[in-house]
Image (tube, rainbow, N blue to C red; front, side, top):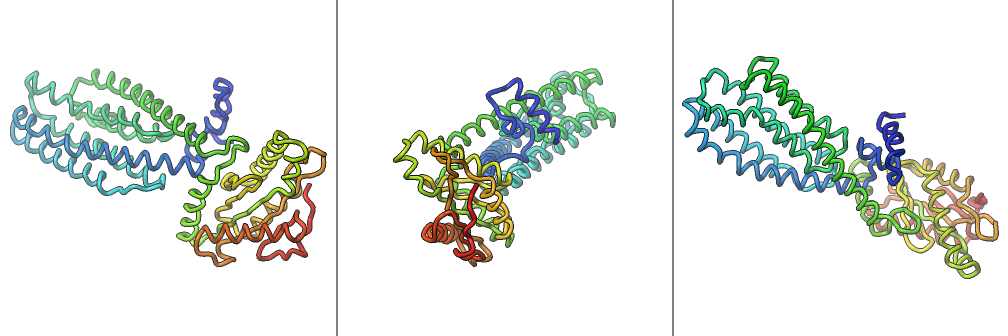
Length: 393
C-alpha cells in the first residue's frame, strides 16, 4: 500500500464526505482521472503564463529604485540581473503554449519557480561586502525575502500536497544554502526566524493549492459524470476518446472500444417501472467499474448503452476483461434472471481505423450484429457470431 493511499484512508475517517480516492488524489497526482489531469493542466498553464507575464513587466520597473538607492557598480549588477530575470519570465509566458498535458504544465510551473531561486542565489551574495545605510538595508532586505513571495504564489495553483512539498523545497533550500555558505545579508537569528516562517508559509500555501484542487475535482466530478450511474457522460466521453485516440496514434499504441447494450432493457422499464430500470443500470455500471483496470474509462453512451475505452489494450487483452465481466455477470433483472448484454468490440490497429468516430461506429455496428445474432454475444474481428454464444452470469 502506498503512503498516499494509507494517509487517505486514515484521513477519510475524519472527512466521511470524501472518498479515499479523492483524498488520495489531493495527496499525490497518480490517481487523477484523465479529465482531472486535463483540466488541471489547462488551469496551471494559464496561471503560470499570467504570473510570468506580470513578473516580466514588473521586475525591471524596480531598476530605477536600485539605481537611486544603491552605489555603483552594485546598482548596475542588480539592474542586469533584473533584466535577465524579466527576459526569463517573458520566455516562460510565451514559451509554454496552452496544453492539456499535465507534465507540460508542471514543467512550466517548475520553470517559473526556478527563476526567483536563481535570482535569489545570485543577488544575495552580490549585496554582501557593502555597508548600507538603514534605508539601503531595508530595501536590500527585500532581496533576502524573495523566496517568501514565490512560496506564497503556490497558493494560486491547484496542486497536490506532494507537489506543494516538492515545489517549496528549492525555495526553502536556497535560503538554507545562503546561511550555510555565510552569504546571509541579515543577522543569523533573523534567518532562523525567516526559515521557520518560510516553512509555515509553504504549508499554508500548499493547503490553499490543495483546497483549489479539491474544489476543481468536485466540479469536474459533478459536471462530467452521469447522475444515475456515476460513470462519464457521453459529452465528456467523446472528449476523452478524442484525446486517447490522438495519444494512441502518436505512440502507435493500441486502443480498444467495447460497446455494450443491455439486452431487453425496455421490458424491464415496461414491466417493472423506471425505478427498477434505474437500479438495473446502476448495478451494470458498478459491475463494469469493478472488473476493469484503473486506466479504463466507462461512459454511459445513451439509455442502456455503455462504451468502455481501454487505452493501451489490444484485442486479446480487451477480451480477457470482457470475458471476466461476462463470467461475474452484470447484475440480475427484477425477475431474478441474469441481465445479459450484446457487446461489440473494435481495436484501432487491428481494424485499421484512422479516427475515433469510425472506431465508435465499428464497435456500435458489431454490437447490433450481436443483437441480430441472438443477443448475449461478443462480436469482434476475431470472434464470429457463431462462436460467441457464451452465457452471462
